[in-house]
Structures are given as C-alpha cells and as structure tokens.
Length: 315
Image (tube, rainbow, N blue to C red; front, side, top):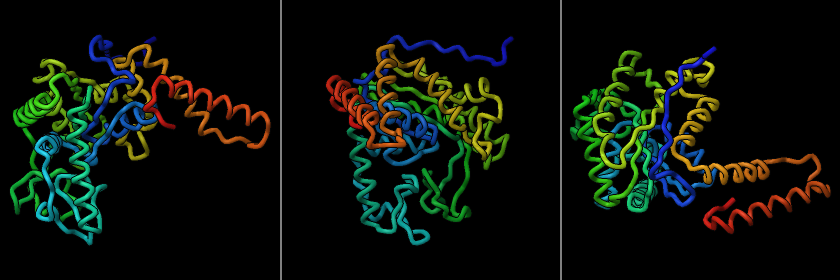
C-alpha cells in the first residue's frame, strides 16, 4: 500500500557537492535550514551575509552591489524606533549604532563579493513574489523593518518581472564565476500573512519564472516546495505555527537534497562527522571515569584522522 506520492528525483551526475566544494546560500529562511545542515556537517559554506532575503529583486540587488563592491554610507541608512536599518538587508544586521551597522553591511558586501567569485555551488531560495515599494524613493526594499505600511506600496511581481530578475542574476553570477553551478528552489514556508490565495499565486509566479530559465548551463531546480506540499502533506510535519516546516520535515527535505546532489564518498564522510558531532555533544554521568576518558581519547583520534584528510574542518 502506498501512503505517499513520491516526487521522482534524479541524482546529479555533474557538479556533485563534496568536501572540496565551496557553497553560498542566498534567499528565504529555508536557505537557513539547509545552511545549518551544511554547517553541522562541516562543509565549506556561507549563508545569507545580508540576512534572510525573501524575494528575487532583493537577491539581485545584493549580487549587483557585491559585484560592484558598493560602499554603503550614512545616506543608505534610515533610523526607525531607535535603531539604524538598511532597506537592502534583513533586520538581523540592524543596530542601535550607525557605525556598527555600516561596518556590518560593508563587511557583508566584501564577503559576498569574495564568495561569489569562489563558489562552486550557489543555492538560491525564493520565498515570495510579493514586494514592498518605499514610496519616498520609489524603490523596492528587501525588508520594511516595521516602518508604517502607509509608507509602502505592496506589489505582486509578475512572472515576466521575476524571469527578468532571475536572468539578470544568472548573467551577473556567470560574469564573475563562469563555471559556478546555480540551483534555485522555492521555500516551503507559506506566507499566509499575504492570504491563502495570495500565497498560492505568489509561489506559482516564482515556480513559473524559474522553469523558464533552468535549461541554461549549470542552472537547476530542487523541488523543496513540492516535496513539502506533496510528499509531506500532513500538519504533523509543521511547526506549532502551522506555517514553517518542523525539524522532521527539514531533515526529510535535507535527505532528498543529499540524495540528489552529494556523492557516495561525501555521504561516507558525513557519517564520520555526524558520529564526531554526537560524541562532542555527549554529556556523561561520570566525566572523570576511566571509561569516559577512553571515549574522549577515541573521539580525539577520530577528529585528527578526519582533519588530516580535510584540514579546513574545525570542531
């Protein structure tokens, strides 16, 4: 008896991810979930230097500014509720100190510029087609920072506008890193504050636009959204807010990503790292016992053996 509708996935035969890969993750909060997994398994990865970015225009803007090595100044900031913000970045970078914020975002621009040139793989997660245009400057922002909504116009990007933005992103990335492998995915997080119907319309615009550009060289699609909607169509796979995927769902989708993109040798190394990570987090009842000291010794031997093969790994 079949109790699930399974989405067929083909294992990548080119540009597989391994421990020599250099990964950059940009976009919606689901990229944070995947990024956390990559960090746990000690891959060479960087996630969201500008914080979570929900829509394609914000991601295009970051990539453009990073390639052009934009230097942010006080003119690019705004002050709201006793905190300094940038309309280009997530609130996680905001600061009560103007100089601190400028230092953060200029460092993030430098880091992004470097990673765009070095990356072997870039994973871009799109969250929504809905955007907010700041009326005063007539510009689409990455984040509203809880500024009164009357100062913005809410707009739904068309499929054509998203396609144009994604094509620009690909051209920009290839201009500094012609062999980079680019993977797009759509976040399974439902933006229900926009409305149920509006969320569906938003996701459909993203998916339609992505599928007009994925036939380009080294550009692919990973169906995070479809896995959540079809294979995991049960509220037991959601967090308490009934919107975000829970830990079980994230682990499931991560497993599908690994099965699609990672080599067998990489899987073997991941198992070694998982064993070490679990050993590090182990809390003994009797930490001074001979048995625990032997356990620690073996753990250090496993670390040393792995680090001889992969010197960049630190625990």
